[in-house]
Length: 368
Image (cartoon, rainbow, N blue to C red; front, side, top):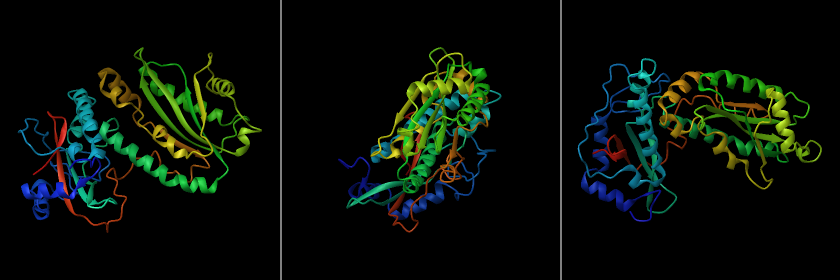
């Protein structure tokens, strides 16, 4: 098992097989621990339902029996984030719990990703296997740390899949990374502020100085040191080659344009950076399509979480415009699938392993 941070070695698989899990009893355990994927059940298998309803399902038991089974993070380095996000989900759910408006979110989050099903499939590396998520159940609560992570991964995958085609169709175009901000606002004024910012951006695109052909725009809201909300836009812009000769907009000019568009009586903070022509704009996709709220901001302040949940309800945080719209139509939409089965179903499957969430340990451990 040494020096295989992303892979499960065949030797390691054999060790587990000798202890408790042959390929046959892994298959048998599926009949014991879960129902078909299309059904809601207490074991946490994936549901395709977008509403995430969990009627008549008891809460998971948190009095755990000690076990020496290996953890997911020990076996697969690439799957370590599961522990972090699931633990954060527990913290957010505990904030929501008992609140009249939000208790239903806590109930749904209690069952989110409690059981993970992984395929073991061959890796390019000889005599090695890797984990591929095959089944899980997600609550789809907007501010669930697990679901917003999975949602972000799907959006990034869609954007990265489309980028080569965009670059091929616009080989001489350049890319810019733009951040538009304004002063912090009261959390209770967040929805109104975001609405005005969107109107301001629309005005900006109508100015004669605007020479941008397309954009991806995402909203991020952070918890300010003053306790207020700090909404701002991150944008990936595609512009014609003439931008750097005849139509160049300086940093100071961007400030003036955004101030005018937003009708501000002060000069806002603006960040603009050009992507080097030899660089792939894909390096900026993780920054553009990250979470609308930082995970730490979700649980650090209960009152902030409650108000942000109300203020952002049914708001859209990612939008695409200009020539990029036809390429990236699904970016920002709720994915039907948060599993990510994007590989050929004909890939050889060696075995399946199941990992259950251990609330007290804050880890996923192998289910036997």
